[in-house]
Image 1 (cartoon, rainbow, N blue to C red):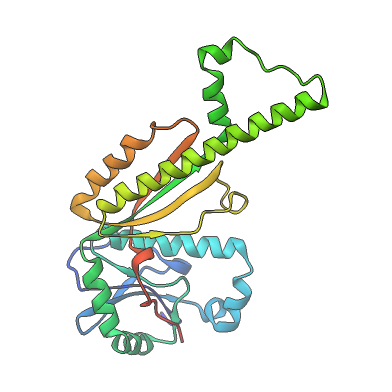
Image 2 (cartoon, rainbow, N blue to C red; image 1 turned 180 degrees about the horizontal axis):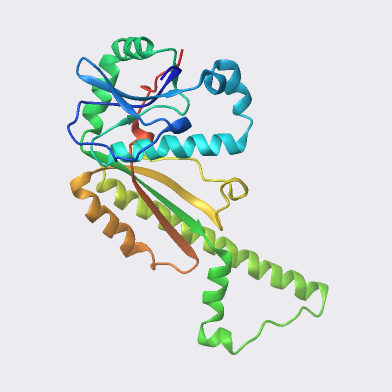
Length: 264
């Protein structure tokens, strides 16, 4: 099959077979392209969609991006089940196999260092959200609160008093959430080989409910993952109005360093 070469990841040689029906970007099954003691996982993609000019246009197409990212992730997830991959950036494309081999040779030392650091490890993601509605519901379920329905303000002064009370309650919730997130991050970091703090997600972009106060990734040995997950699970009911989300295990995207290849 002709076409450009799409590169998903770089890894060391491995013996395990990938999923039998696994397909990659543009529907082409991934294959292994060895070079020395490194392997690039590649598939063919049509130049009509993945040339430099075509990619610029496609990057404005959300549906195309979503489908491509999903196919890319499926291949990386399959690799993560059988080896330790170093995932490359979405739409890393080369002209032919020779171009991929040149990339492997030029970046060989960096790839080796990173793969050594990631060997036998996976990434777990942890997010903490403030759920104001849940906190309000928890307060309303207290016995003393259930006996006192909220009174409507009867004057401007009364309205301002209620607003100040609500502001103090909100400030207290944010403060508790930040303290909770700081403590959780410290405990999880002790159980991980490395950790990354990402910027909080914008709820309008992520679609997640609540205010994101912790968005972190942790590099965890595979054989320590069960204990790591249990540590997260034990915290989930510790604070009303605060939600903890765990995702993974993933390939170590957040810890790949500067070894992401550039297409040519």
